[in-house]
Image (tube, rainbow, N blue to C red; front, top):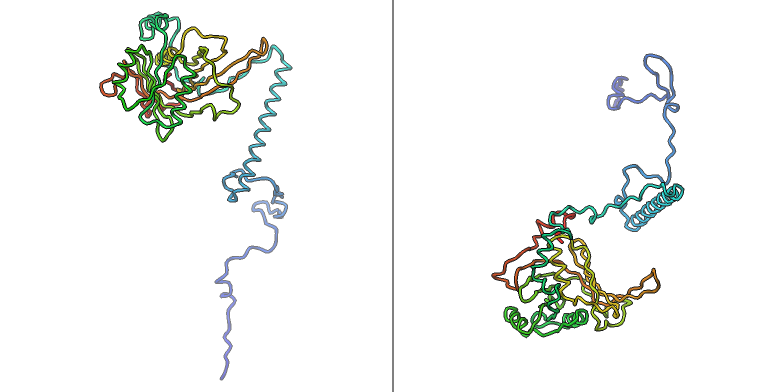
Length: 353
C-alpha cells in the first residue's frame, strides 16, 4: 500500500491556540520607547503571617474552637485598649488637678428616659390636695393602723404556702388564711367586717407564685402585679437570721409619675408609720424600668462612715399589670390603668412608673 505525504501549511498551526504572551519580561511603553522591566514595575509585597484581610470576620471561621479562641483574643485586646485609655485619662486628670474637666456621664436607658408629663412635683398644690383626699389619707394622717390578710389561690402548693408565711414575717400585723374555695367578692366583706385594711392574694401556676392581687380596703384601689424571680430564705446564700417582730423602715425608690406615686403610697400603707429602729430592719421597694424589686435587709453601723447590710429574704420582682378603682371586681370594675404591651413597651426609654 502506497503512503502519500500531504504537506501541511504553517498558517494552520496556530488556529486552535490563543495568542501567546511575549516571552521576554520587558514591555515597551508607547510614546516614549523606553523599556521598563516588569520586575521593576511590580512592587514587592511581603505577606504578613498574622494579618487578616480588612473584611475579615470571626464568624467566617468554620472551626468552632478556633472561632471561640479568636473571639476571646479580640475581646481581650479591646479590654486592654479600654484600660489604657482609662489610665491615660486618669493621669491627665491628676496632672490638671482642680482644672480638670468634669467626668463624662455614661448614657443609660434611665438617664435617657423620655419625659413624662405626669411626673410628680412635690411642691405642687394639686398633688398635695390629692394626697389629702385619696384613699390612703386616713392612714397617712394616723387615723388607721394597717392590718393585712394574706391568702392564696385554690389548693396552693408548698412553695406558695411558704412564700405567704415568709411575707407574714416581713409585714407587721399580717395574718395568713387558706382560701377554701371562696370567691374574692365573698372574702372582701368579711375582711372589712374584721377591720382588715389590705387583702393580698398570691396566685400560682405550675407550683410557682406568678401573680399578686393587692386590694386596699374598704374603698380600694386594687392593683394586679406579676411576680417573678421569687427566692425564699433557704434558697439565698449568706442570708441572716430570721427577722424579728420589730416594725421595719420602708424605702421607696424612683416612683416619679402620678401612677408611680399611687403605687408607692399603696406599698407604704402596708407598714406602720412608726418604725422600730431597734430592730435595724429595712424593707425596700426599688422601681427600675417599671420593675419593682423587693428586698429585706438588716443593717449595722460599723463606724461613723461604714454600714454593713445583710439580706434576710424573701426577695421577688413585681410588674404592674393593672390598677382598678375600688375593691376587686373583675366584671364591672373601673380600671384606672391597664398595661398594653404592644403600645406602651414599644419605646424602651419610656416608663410608666
